[in-house]
Image (tube, rainbow, N blue to C red; front, top):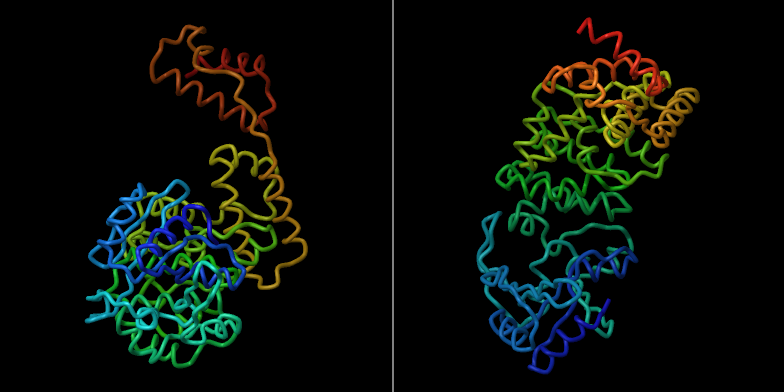
Length: 407
């Protein structure tokens, strides 16, 4: 886990008389033998001192959240967040007032789940104050201490519980934790949409999110987040299709499967979850095309649609329509599954043909530059597509000569 830049940061703070440890997700995922995404550090030095001493060592440091104890060191390889040990002084379910401490266990106790409170020295010594390793190995997602108190400190933890249950849970959910989430579900409405989507997107992209989404549905949480609660059956079907094809899950596509096509649902969902303009547009586009592919569609219709909308959009559409078909016919007939697979393989491998003529060809036949050139060209292209992209340049020019007098 240690690279030269990290070693330098550890050495600088150690020589200044302070301790530094790896904390949180990087420790958890190293133990679980998962890919480590972000490396976060904690120290008993105050943030102003960290800023000063690292800057003095020619390491770029940004005061990204210095009022909460966090600075970001940016050496040559990658950025690292370094946060001073803290204790909560006051919480209101959304924000916390903190003060700095030198007590590592006190800092660990303010975290959410037992396995997220793990920390480690650079030599590999692990500090586990709340049996986090045992819970991690058992696939048990459990709040530290009293679950109701942890949830009341930050209502986003309701969403985080389901995210971690979906991605790390291997057994029935911890009943105290689930009860705390049930009691606080209504308070999630006070949390910003961006924070909710950050957690929910990771729940949706879990390998098999269905069971956890049903838990969210059971406690009334899914209905608070989505206009009509969502269709868990369809996202389960999509997850199965993606597994068959070895396709990586993607949050907007899975959200599209969950909410189902309906007037206004996409817009309401985008507003509630504060989706970016790009994600909102993609969500609407995905559901507007639902049902336009089928396991029985002809090769001509497939290529025609593929040419019109592009490969990426059409492959997304196949995944959603295949999932809808599977959800409607829970086992999926052999012929239907074979048909969908053939459609997918064809759409994935088909080489897009190039339309043989262009606007200059139209103008060479006496049409002045302007909108009419595009209209004529579009007419010929439609004819070419309807003829299965087979007419060559000479055939397209012949057709052009025939239609110009009539357009």
